[in-house]
Image (cartoon, rainbow, N blue to C red):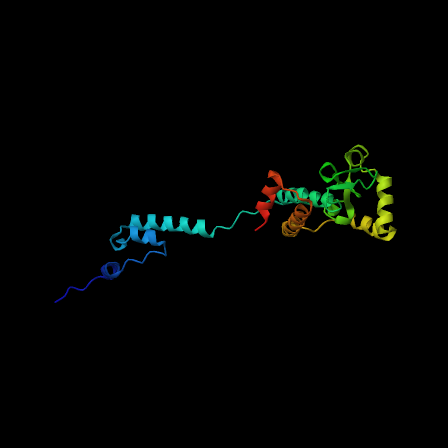
Length: 217
């Protein structure tokens, strides 16, 4: 006659039966190389399972890890370089010469600057607005701080007083552009820059090529 188990003994024996019947769980998906190395996984100890699990998680993290986002300041810095090149190269003749819009001095585009009608510090939202930027010589853009009166005369003659007034109103607004918008802009201006390079037979220097390689996918 079998001796009946107490409630505590029955629970202990039931747990033991479950533990004995339990089968080892298959390991998560891994590379073929890792499978070949660990083919005898059925003989693993608990510590081996834990070690393998950590290795697989590490591999998956490297594969599916999100790419690091480029800071907004870095995007704008690269955009500023390419944008300035396009502003100065676009109006140049095939020899690469164009005029300063405020004093009329003719010089090679590489010696001119990207002059803002409404300055960067006053209207950050217009820094990359084509109608607000034109080639200027060093004297007008820096020493004369934009040479405002001749620049305004140039703007009125080229675009009209109504357009200039609207531009000045736009400059009072805060820019809503984020990293995505600036990234779209830099990709577009890289394309424009490459067109100008081909037209003017210009080979990008090391700094320019680095920016192109960074953003042109």
